[in-house]
Length: 353
Ligand code: NAD
Image (cartoon, rainbow, N blue to C red; front, side, top):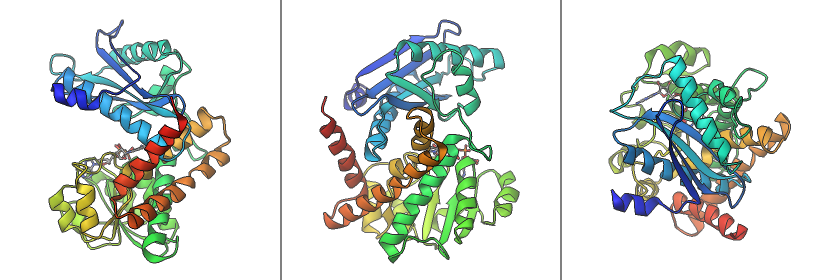
């Protein structure tokens, strides 16, 4: 709607193009380059209408500005969306996908470094390697020594740092040994997070809508639980690592955990749920800080040209940033969401135009 658009549109530039090769729409929104080049993934996903896709692109690119600013990543915020619309193809065969990636790469290249594309829902590390044949303004293509994608590795490590800060805030020590964690969503990040938590001595229960994930979860040292009711299990830390939008006011009131710290994007159904969680006495580590490790690690290596060790080291700032957010939210009796937004807005204001 016009109101949704008006509420979202405060971007530096937005490009909507019909791809030269495929005729499919390519949308790129550069929200802010105030703190560095805009970085954000490309979402290749089904949308009911071009307007829905456009508003999502604007909203997600602004989210990337806040994420990068809150953790001091030295990058700005942008996003690309390639919507699969009811009127167009619903499946991408190899040739169409390749054409689409080249269409996208072309638009990215024309932006001349203002925007760096990376993987997101519907796009992969392998896709980024293909885009890299056409433009250098791409990230999230590298892997770690153990073959894990840079973003997955960084995201899982970052969530662990956010959990350490939360543990210190709640129980006085930044230690996960003996802590009880429920991981919902045993995908790329959930699996790596579980492995790390088990190594840190935590007792992990895990679940996924995809039951074929069970053996991998058990191999990683987690106890498999049923998805039904998993969010409301009695536990110390709940780690949402599947989809966004799961926490509603009703669910917030039904939770039996002390903290929610996970990788899922846009965890709260609406911003107001942050207050519901606070009211229920649950510490919520804002998702855009807890899951910033992927972009931090990837851009550290690929954009800031740090060594993998240096890049890993900068993920520790997620712990101090989370600690600062939790402290400010306590001291000023605001939600953790408001505290995190304020840290980001101050960083943006300090950078000026
Ligand atoms: P993934 O696709 O590898 O894993 C997601 C898992 O969630 C899958 O195993 C899927 O079966 C499961 N799932 C889907 N619907 C579910 C449901 N209703 N209940 C339980 N499980 C369900 O994705 P990922 O890369 O591991 O990312 C997980 C989350 O973290 C996503 O929300 C993603 O946007 C977010 N995130 C990921 C990264 C990253 O670096 N990969 C960075 C930032 C945020």
